[in-house]
Amino acid sequence: WEGPLKVITAEISKRIISVDKDVIKDFAYGRPSLELCQDFLCYEDEGAMECHAHKFSQKRCAKSGLAVFKTNCGDTWIDDETNETVTASKKAKAKFEYCTYDIGTDVIGVNSTILTAAQEHFDSYKLNKAGVFYDAGMQTSAGWVTLLLSLVMLIVSLLAMVKLLGIAVRGAAEEVLQKALNMNGYLAILVGCGITVFVQSSSITTSTLTPLVAMGTLTLEGMLPLTL
Image (cartoon, rainbow, N blue to C red; front, side, top):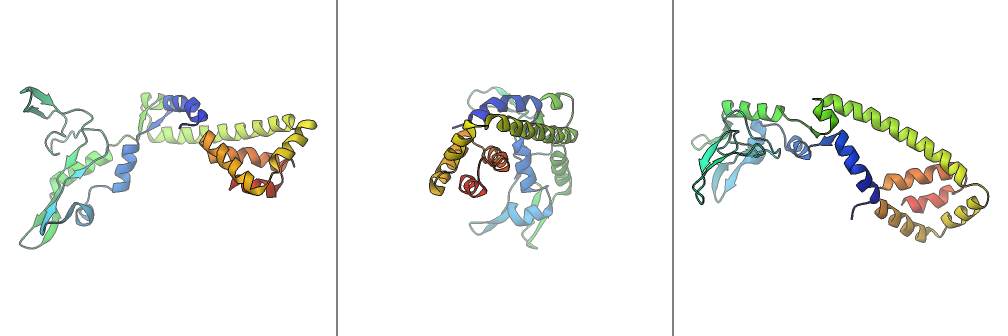
């Protein structure tokens, strides 16, 4: 289920800015380092210590030529089934085997050349992957612009909503709304849950209720179960 507001706004927001969530996954995993080898990439498997490749989540092939075969841009090989030459996709997820393990000294280390290549690949990320700002070559600056734009839109929308609600809930309409909203607390919890599920946004529910409380149409005690 997708809320109707998400359907309406998703296409518009994608045309403005689109965040590459795979980049965020790589941020969470960490920048290639010796610490990653020691903590995650090297471990005992069936009694023997093994070091594994650092696999990026970003769908972007490596330009250094030092990544694992088939994940470098331009890598070619012969397909076993079709016997045809295959070229690595630009969206291949890069892998770097920079972790090393010395059996004699029982020490986990790194290949500094491959590690540097992996770090350069990590640092060359593009968090914004689509939209008008991407087309304009904007990355970090696009985030600041959209942050300011969203805050302005939020404030204008809230002010407009308060104004419209003030006009809408006058006279008989206010009395009907008061009776409808000031319901049994347990029923209000279910109603608030249903509205939130429908619009897929708890912030929309609470931001609509807040001005109603400010105008005296809904009591603070009546808002509590709806918010819960």
